[in-house]
Image (cartoon, rainbow, N blue to C red; front, side, top):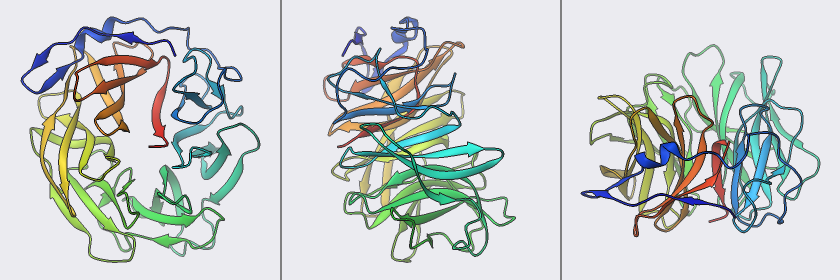
Length: 321
């Protein structure tokens, strides 16, 4: 895979990636092809120009991703833990559905539709689905009934067993991420999707939801919380009180998240978002700057190496890990 590696410099424990804002994309952002390498491990993403789902294997050419959908309207793809499937939200005519598609290509399958009778309060506005570690279920964000707040729900991958995880919610919940044993998800929580000022540990067995405060100057979780492969850390894209969005990491102990530490420091005008663990000490995340096409970058938290992984991409997910 073709990559671009930035020069490294450190600000204490902060990895500076601002110099990468000037890197040019490796293609013009047009539609992908059939993919030069079968997908086993790598990124799933969408492109803003056509809103289709793409995948590219780590050993493949980032300029030739495999396009998995063709009708547009796709949002927030997430790779299964076995690397064989992607779940995403399909928007069409003001409605949303959860769909899956094989990473090898093929027919999409509808997992769950808005306002399905299984959702007693009424379900709409699906967002940010993610597979459970065993691949048997998907947790996602939805809007229940006429509520102005978002909630979390689980659905089995055969379309059965709908379960609200945050019933009678009076606050909003953001994109979920599973802990490694699949017993709970971690998500941003707050008074609205744009004001997720806490981290919620949500058990799948109906147990008590616990909350952790943000720190290090982070006002809100911008898009996603991501639990590390071994469950010891959490990454998130934090919106700062001083402006801008940067990537932060904190220790996860049981249901509590410790003090956050900023691990990237973007240049003026750049935004860093959508973190996804690509290894025990490596993160993939999105950088957008100055109206240019966003791209997926990798940052090794141990060595400090930063590289452009996929140009002209957004809403990335990595798997399997």
